Image (cartoon, rainbow, N blue to C red; front, side, top):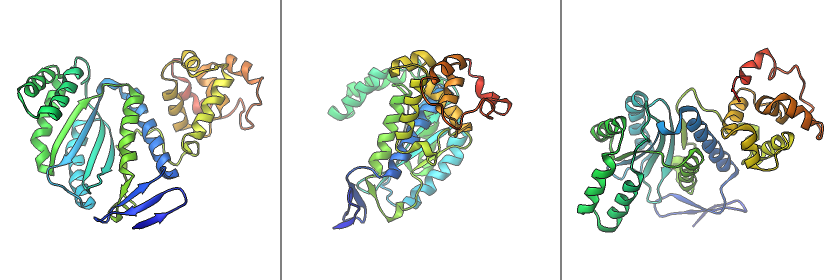
Amino acid sequence: MIHKFDGQRIWLNLPDGTQQRFGPPTQGELKKNFALEKNIEYMANHFRLERLGFLTLTFADNVTDFREAQRHFNSFRSNILGKNFEASVVVVEPQKRGAVHYHLVVVCQTDIRTGFDFTAFRECQNEYRTNGKAARFYALLKQYASTASPELRHLWAHLREVAGHYGFGRCELLPIRSNAEGIAKYVGKYLEKGSQFRGEQFKGARMVRYSRGWRAVSQSFAWLDTGREWRKLVAQLAHILGCESMDALCLRLGKKWAYHALNLLKSFPDATPLELAIVLGGQAKALRNSRKVKAPQSFNQGSSFLTAEGSIALNFGL
């Protein structure tokens, strides 16, 4: 039975009371996903990728009541997450069958990535899917586990010990194999997938949560309009700096230019592309190229972004 139709998307009522969406994501979902991806990229650049871990939590029982799931998770967050990890991003994924999963990017105290045998881990997963817990599965398990850092082995043991106290069964923590952009998009897919299945119990629920004090990008930023304004800002920045491609922009500003730009926009959300170009790319080059385009009306040499009040923005060492 049709629950809702808005001209682009249709929601169908499933037998268990959940609604499944068919069609493109809503504007709000796109904004939330964009903010999530940029925040994870920011986290990876700020804390270093080798300190990040991907933590998956599933309940031992098939918990379908979101309030009960949140009660367990909030207790886990207060007693375990806050005491073992410096920061975290949490994504709630409602399953089609009604169960609730949690996917987290966490910041560990030390490097958990260097030396880890990702190939053996992937082969171990494939072996389990094909033959279950046969002899080769345990051999591969032993192989990749032996390459884990002392910090990672400690966290594995601790999570195994405490998971059951909070109702969790599977509690898997792994280092990040890909780069910052890769893990950001990977986690974003869970948010997008979860948004397709919603019931009344999820109405108004926070499906993404950030630990306090570090989030760089807010969903409410005006330039987060499904990424369109961000792409426009990047295009203007590249034009002012005389860069004709993303590769040229990275070469001009460095590989972490987007991280620095987001850091600036966190403190100065009204900064213009020309102001960003002056700080990120050097004043002379930016002003020389800006003569070829009409400078933003809001730009002036005495703005707080470029003077004493905003001088901290200049200290990037680029």
